[in-house]
Amino acid sequence: INKELFLERDTRVTKKEFELNFWQHYLWLESEFRTVLEYVELDSANYSTYSRRIEKLILQIGSEFDNVSREICGLQSVDRTSISDYYSYYTSNYNNITATKVIAGDVRLTPFDGWNNTAPGETLAFWKAYNSIKHDRITNYKEASLKNALNAMAALFCVEMLYTRKLYIVDTNEENSFPETESKLFILDGLEHRIRPSKFDWPYDLYDDDEGKKIN
Image (cartoon, rainbow, N blue to C red; front, side, top):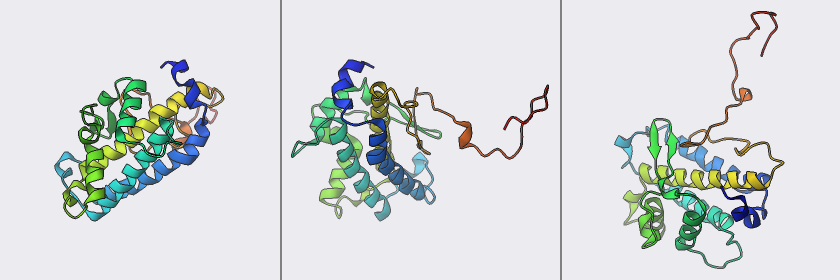
């Protein structure tokens, strides 16, 4: 990652500020999505499943993707922005984002697959579904599918994680490039996932074989 390329924009907000204002909202949306998964198994056989609950969730995720993208792309002061603006920034500043994979258990997703500059709003599948529902939910109710919600959630996770890594480069006082509270659903393919012992509640005690001292 080219630190100089992002230094001017990324110092607008610290990693902690971004986590507070945006990542925490992402975690809430992820929790809502995981509630859906309690009733609909995360399996490609269920991708076409649609519901009013998923419809509402896609509208919320799409709106947050818009808000986060304005922040990441440095467009907060611009009155009107478009998906074309986001396409230009993301594809210029995130290496090969269209091929970036997000992992959810046994499922691998490429949420920006096929996104191109000829029709940014039409070639980004989850965004097209979001707009279809937003403008005519009666006609386009089947667009409120598990597949579209999953890819929307994965895309939001993807840009927030990539941006957090860039903030870490500038904000050298931060502990690491991962959010303090990590996703319980996704990881980025190829990105080492931090594992902290404090995240686990061990059901037993460990002792050193030589000294007999308790380890945990």
